[in-house]
Structure formats: C-alpha cells, structure tokens
Amino acid sequence: MEDVEDEDVRRERERLEDLKDRDAFAERVRDRDREKTKKVVEDRSSKDKGAAAEAAQRRLLADDAEARLLAMPSLRQHSRQEYLTKREIQQIELLRKEIADDEALFSGMKISKRERRDLDHKKELLKLVEERLKINDKWDGYQLPEDYLTEQGKIDKKKKENALYQRYEEAKPKDDQFVTDVDQWEASQTRHSTFKSGALDKVEVQDDYEYVFDESQTIKFVMDSSMPGTRMTAAEKLLQDQIDSAEKRAKTIEETRKNLPIYTYKEALIEAIKEHQVLIVVAETGSGKTTQLPQYLHEAGYTANGQKIGCTQPRRVAAMSVAARVAEEMGTKVGYEVGYSIRFEDCTSDKTVLKYMTDGMLLREFLTEPDLAGYSALIIDEAHERTLSTDILFALVKVRRRTHAITCCRWLT
View: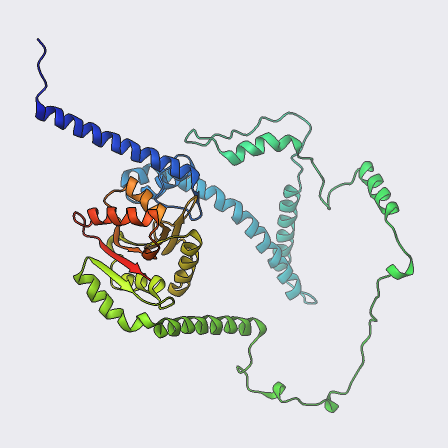
C-alpha cells in the first residue's frame, strides 16, 4: 500500500513548485524583453554571451588575483607587440627629423669627420628602413591564410573577415613605386578624355616680387605697441568663449532652479518624506515637481549604496524629454547618472541613479523584481489621469510598501 502524502508535505511541495514556476516565468520575461529592447548605453554589468561576457570577464580580473596572474603573460606579450609596432613608426619619424635638424644646423658650416660620419650613418639607416617599408609583399604565389582563431580558441571576427575578403584586394603600387605599361596607357587615356576649355582653365600665378615701402613712413598702430600678455590668440579666445558660455549656462540653470516655486519647500519636502512613507504632492503645472523632487532626493542621499529613484510618466515622450532636462541640470549625459526606459528602448547603465520610465516599464520590473529592492523611492507622476497601468501600480505599491522600506511619492498635478 502506497504511503499517503501528508497535508503539510503536499503544501510545501506545491509552494516550492510555485516559486520555481514564478522564477522561470520571470527569467523568460527578462529574456524576451532583452531581445526586443535596444540598448542605447552599454550596460557594464551585462552578463550576456559573446563580447559582453568577454568584457565582463576582463573586468572581473581586477578582483581575482589568481586569474590576473595567469592572464598577465599573454596580455604583456600582446601589449608589447602593439607597442613595438607604434614605436617603429615613431622612431622612423624621429630619425627623419633629426637628419633634417642636423642638415639645417650644419648648413654652410665646416663640421668634423665624426659629425659627418654620424650624419651619413643616419641617412643610410633611414634609407634602409624606407626601402624595407617599400617592399611589396603582394605576390602571385599561394600564401597560407592567417589563422583567425585567438589563443583562447575563440574566433576573431575581424581576422575572419580579412581572410574572406583578402582575395578581392588588388596589389596597387604606390606613388613612389614602378608604373607598368598598362598604368601609363590608362593614365594617358584618362588625360585625353578630360575636357579642357582653353585659356580659362589657366591657373593664375602671382608675381614673384612685392612692393617695397619705407618702414619709417608706416603708421604705428596702438595695438602693436600694447603690453605683452594682454592679447589672446584665436584658439585661446575660442576656448575662453566656450568656458564663459558653459559658466553662463550653468549659472542660468541654477538660477532657474532657485526661481521655481517648489524650491522654497525643499527642506519641508525632505523632512516630510523622511517621516511619511507615502506622500501626496499637489502643485500647479510648471512648479518643478517632475524635475526637481528627484534631484532633491538624490542630494539628500537616497541614491547611496547603489539605490535608484524611479519616476513614472504616462507617455514615452515625456519620460525622454524630462530625463534630458534633468541630465542637463545635473551636468551629465543621458544614460549615465540620469536615464530613461521606455518600450523597445533602454537608455540606462549601471551608473544610473535617477530613472524615468513609463508606467508599463515599472509593471515589467514588478514581474522580474517583485520587491523592487533596487529602488529607495518611487514617484508615480500624473496620477490624476487614472490610466490602467497607474491603478495597477497603486495596488502593487500598496502591497509592497508593507514589506519593503520604500518611499512612495504619489503626485497629483
């Protein structure tokens, strides 16, 4: 006779199965959203396969001492090879400049045998290097293709494309190389087929002489006799104008923030948010609720320890425009400290602390992260419009605020 399952055991088994199904559903939702969402800003915390996973693995070397020691020899060798390639070009250019300086310095002077020998040695060395660089490696025989597999056994996409399209490259000679009969014939045909209208195409050549004036009869302008250091070059003036414009814009933004009606209630709002878990803010349109209150919470320390402040908008255009305005006021770019998330487009990163999003995107986050542990404060804007997403959000936030210490600021504008 089979053992009858106990009631408590059955309930526990059903509970575990329900949790497993919930986690699997959340994972499927995240995968589907990740495939359909365009990532505007690179998420450094991404753990996707491919290049993102490889980049994340390289970033983890900073915390893993053993893996860093194992990867150090190959990284050092690769860095050395790249350095030598760049170093060769720099040394050739340096040698060319040294020869030019020596010729200019010793021009018209009697130099010693040692100086003459050193100069001739430099010229000979430069000649040999330039001849080696002019060698044409393109030959008609068969060459083994370059291996496009890296040392780790992965496929290098760039090398693979070069191997596939290498046969379409033509060995075209440079300007200082020999010219074949075919090239001469093509150049002749091109020159004969070029239309010329006659004397009108003649290039005007300026005369080789200039007027001679007596400098004692010239006018002494005031600016020519001014004190040194009082005039700026064009580049310095342009830089100074840019600095003045940036300072003026920052000053204008700061004055605009202080002139908003909500600025006088800044301290009172912060104290009220600390005392009350749910707060209703009512104000006229344009008073600064959407743009200023998240910044006040950020300045008060609500974004410490990796926490974020979320603000919902009923429309996608509103979320994008408000995020751009707040990013400008905070002196950053959209996608860094300030970002937005709408359907099919995610402009956030691991540095984002102020996140503007539509109501539907917050509902999506409830599916993948029911406790909203990454948020320290939630702002549901334009709540008076009473959309379906807003009503559902109110119900979910009402349940979650009992078990999670999250500040919910509901705005009625």
